[in-house]
Image 1 (cartoon, helix red, strand yellow):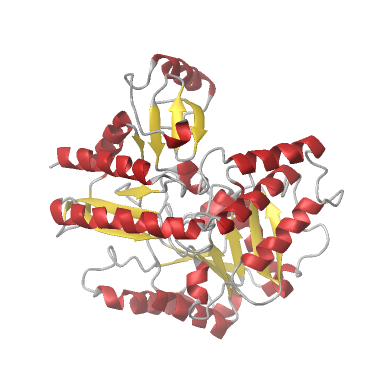
Image 2 (image 1 turned 90 degrees about the horizontal axis):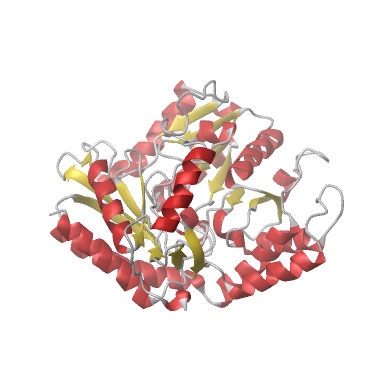
Amino acid sequence: MLRESLPKVITELPGPKSKEVIERRLNAIPSAISCATPCVIDRGEGAMIQDLDGNIFVDWVGGIGVLNIGYSHPEVIEAVKHQVDRYFHPQINTIHYSEYIELAELVNKITPGDFKKRTAFFNSGAEAVENSIKIARKYSKRTEIITFTGGFHGRTYMAMTLTSTVKPYKNGFAPLVPGVHRAPYPYTYRTDDNIPKEEVPDYCIEQLEKILVDDVAPETVAAIIIEPVQGDGGFVIAPDEYIKKLRAICDKYGILLIADEIQTGYCRTGRLFATDYWADYGVYPDILITAKSMAGGLPISAVTGRDEIMEACASGELGGTYGGNPVACASALKVIEVLQRDNYAEKAVKIGEVCMKRFEAWYEKYEFIGEIRGKGAMLAFEIVKDRGTKEPDAERVNRIMTACKQKGLILKNAGPFGQVIRALMPLNITAEQLEAGLSILEEVLEQEV
């Protein structure tokens, strides 16, 4: 059974059947929609996929964080089938349906904060980001937004403007949305080397305070949006001390704090939400954005916020044709049930412990690994040409990823220079499959010495 299989490559990659489909792709799909994995999926189960040619891969990308529950979970399949048999989509602005309401009630309950919340559903993370900004501006009656270096929030226009990296996300698409300002994210590894790591949070807070003096008046700022752990930015973790002081700044100036948990949500970091760690020291976002693993691969996203904030918009000002469609809601309800019942957060913790032990050994052995980091099963390490200069080595990263795929491990990179190897394996990966992936990666790293 594929769900229990180990990686096995039996043809050259891409194999003949996959190659035929990839060649058709080249003539049918814009090249801007890129893909570097040399196979075409035929089936997926758990953490494993099989391509059209019978090759089996362990997937450490998981739809870029979509598949925390893995491919083809049987209970989720049944929940979707049951919903499809009843109806597809009456549209929430036209006809009431219970799946939307039940899911909203559940998300309001499980997200951090013992206060009344409301949730609205959309199709994608980018849509949720766009609507969070609409809501924040409407509630605050302010216009300006502060975002962060290294952040990624999506490819629609407001989300793209909030996103930090110019290439490939913003280059040539100007003019972008006005009213967006950028503060330094507390990236301790790549902040000025003259600043000790333990002082980076305070330094970044000071820089934010300067922005509120030099660039934008605080009384005009509607919201600050931040990823608790940056995804595309390279799995950079915001220190607790920084988050505490960021919340204090928001409270001081009446600025809303938006947490983008599109990639960190639904057990990835070892808690149901990364902001559950914030809650341990009494910090809560005013608005929480979730998506990706929420419905196990069906398109849905959520904006959850304090009652008074979410009620600021008038009737008809929020919505969309497919947002919170019943099939995705049914899937999400079952996904969340399974994640909580089967303690996927603990699975993430255990995966992280196993991987970080190996990462630590690799750091000691391979001089081209500049830093390792992770929270739960959101894991990464930086590849550099020199530990002293920290010069990124994207070419080596690309060689590593290519070699791993040829051996049956699918990886993806991240970081502002493409210098970070990241791991987002499904959380129901077996111990044997995790070890197989680690062994492939170690074998490839050894070849780079």
